[in-house]
Length: 304
Length: 208
Image (cartoon, rainbow over all chains, first blue to last red; front, side):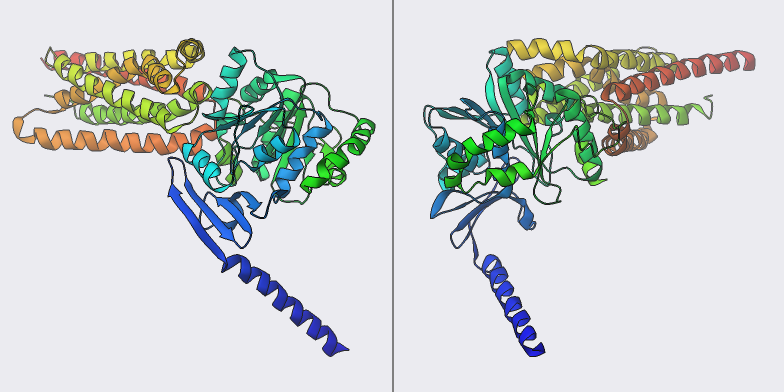
């Protein structure tokens, strides 16, 4: 009996080791370049292709997709972004800040072929790599602008444009663009939202910055949803121009969305269960200092 | 006969001007970001403007030092520099809003904004280096050594100003609070130099 248990354990270890080896040894770098802002690495591991912005830290994958099944979203956080559809299920104008491999844009274009998608990416090399290696798709409805996200939003406000869904994905584990985290910026983004508009932000804040970031979002939007599966420091912040929907409304919308999202391997019920409201779960101190254009040491706060 | 404390005072002032120049330059990126973003060309604009205005400042400062140079005039330059950096804190937003409206290309927008905010104060701060050399040098033989020592101290000030501002000051204070503090420091140092000048003149009179 004891021997049996031992055997099971051993086979499990071998199995895990095999998985580990296949992801480590099987990885092949197919593109490597130093752009103006970072190192860009495209890596193939069997069927999985990933975009990395740094060599050593394996956590810093920006975008991944399965070559055999490009529409299946690999990353947990990209799936969590779809929580926005619980607030607005027909986004006609979508703004994505931070392109990565362009997988989010591709998926959204498949889901809403008639919607207009504007992608904003600061690094021209990332746009090039997305087109070349990740099948990033553009047409008259899907456009890309090589620009700083904050400037794009300011210019869009001057042109009196509106968006139904703004996806803020300009942060990665290593560096945070500090001007995209301030009260002033979040106010500008709020002004750019249509009446039923929603904003989802993928952020990596830990410890000290978590509180500052939360307090700043709360001050601009009055309430937000925290969307996260595990207790790691990666979370989606969901806010909307109007008041966020109640639990009852959310549950009704899940039923509508379920069939729409299942082809993309997205379980909207699971996403719903990982959402918490900042009004019922305020997990930061009351007197936390807000981030403003005058005070925005986000990167310093994130290492404290 | 010069006072023994006059040279250390000049070195201290040169250190502080170096400190403030790089502190302001570093904050420049933070000031411009809301309107012109954080692309690489933002730093291109800021560094270009600082280098250009320092170059002009050296030229003007050197020329100005040929006309009856004194600690009093030296202090005056500090006071003007301090006053010239105040608009960075007071009017940066309306200035940048205006430029943002009229110039679409963020390269030229950030270049013009850097020029509008930093050109004049950095020229005045640049004037201080050659002027310090003029006040410190008493004979030709030691002039190179003194210039070397002065650049050592003012550049050391720049290095410390950079690290202190970027590592610590931005973590506790608002950008405008830091700028206004720099302004105050420069004005106080300038007044100090003028007072020291008066004091040494009075001493000279009493010796006579």
